[in-house]
Length: 102
Image (cartoon, rainbow, N blue to C red):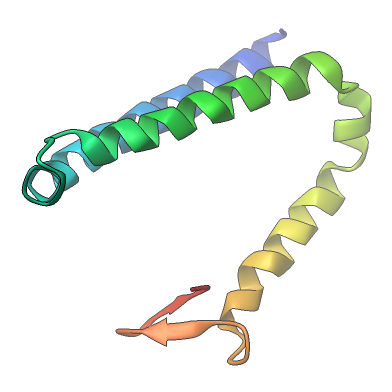
């Protein structure tokens, strides 16, 4: 892993753990009252963090990075288009002023 890949991996970990801390803080009361477990929602999210880390490891180890670098612009454009589709009235739904998929 070169210096830039390590940098992005560490930034990913920092953002994930910061988000997990915020999630635990925000959902503590709801989890305790609804599921009788103070960290139920946190545990579910932590499971998906582990799944994402395994997925990242798999992608990093199995797929040629040159292919990823070659199509990075295309992947970014596709992600931007899919993200903006939520603002179409037929696909997105507005609940309390926020556009959503579901």
